[in-house]
Length: 320
Image 1 (spheres, rainbow, N blue to C red):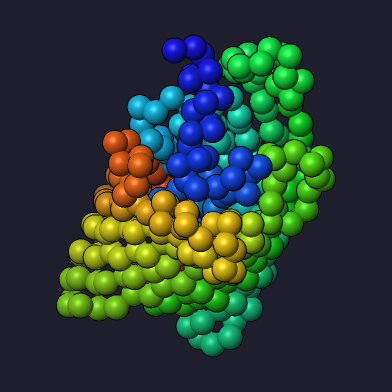
Image 2: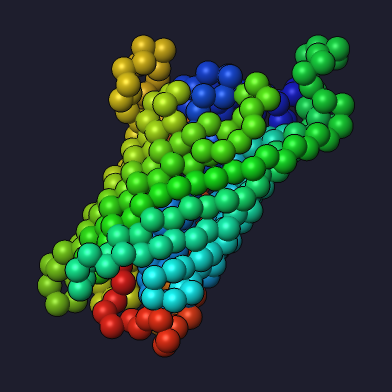
C-alpha cells in the first residue's frame, strides 16, 4: 500500500466515516472530552469565574492506531484582574494527517453580580490561527494535481470568540460563538462559525457524595450538531467518576446528513483526582460506537489553581 494510505487517505477515511462531506462541513475545532474542567476552551466568559488564577493543560490522542488520526494539545491560564475583570490566554494545537492548526488567543471577561450567589459574565477572545498543510506527507493518485502542494504551506488568519456565562456554586449555563472573525479563501479548511451551549448543576446525594450532570451542544450550521451528555459522581470532594455519551442531532433537518447522524456516537469514561484543593489530574478513555469501534481515544489533563487573596477566596468548593 502506498503512502496515500498514510496521510491523505487517512483524512478522507476519517471524514467519510464521520458522515461529513469532503468539503469540510464537519466539526473543525479540536475535540476534548474533559472540556468541562476547563471552560476557557469553549467560552471566553469563563475566565476568572473560579475566583482564582488557574493553569490547565491537556493532551488527546484520538483513534489511537489509525494513521493520520487527530492529536490535540491545549494550554490555558486565566485569573482575575480585579473584582469585575478577568483575563486569560489559550493555546491549542491540532494535527490531523497532513494538516495542523495552531491557535493562540487572549481572553477577557467582565462579571456582573446578579445576587449574592449568582453572577453573569460576558467575554471576548481575540487571537490568530496558523493553518499548515504538509504536502510532503501526501502521495496523491494524480501527480499533476495542482491542489496538492509540493512542500509545506502555511497561512495565518485572525480568530475571535464571544460568549456569556451565568453561574453560581451549584449551576451554570454558557453560550458562545467561535470563529466569528476570519478571512475566507474558499478553501475547505476555512474556519466556520461554531455555536457552543453548555449547562450543568451539582446535587447532594449524601454528605460525601454529589451528582453532577451536564450537557454540551455544538452546532456549525453546516452538518449535524454534536451533543454530549455527561454525568459525574463526586466523592469526598476529591474523586470524580463519570461517563460521557456523544451523539449527533439533525437539528436543522438537513436531508444531506439525515442518514449520517447516527455515525458520531461515542462513549467515554472519566476519572478526575484532586490530591489537594489546588491540583487536579484527569484521564478519559473514549471508544466509538460506529465503524471506528476498533480504535480508542485517550486524554490526560492537569490543572493547578493559585489563590488570589486580594480578589477572591475559595469560600466554598467550585464544581465548574
